[in-house]
Length: 42
Image (cartoon, rainbow, N blue to C red; front, side, top):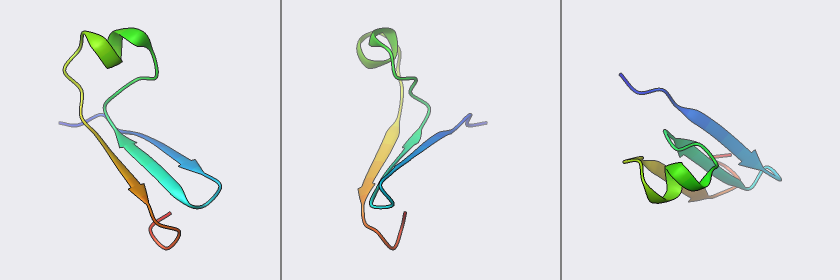
């Protein structure tokens, strides 16, 4: 199971994955995110 968060910025950049936007997720937890810079994808 994958609990996914999605963020779309300006209809151009997308980030989706399991990471929360906090220091623990970025430095301690094992997380996976995919970042896409593509307006058609967004």
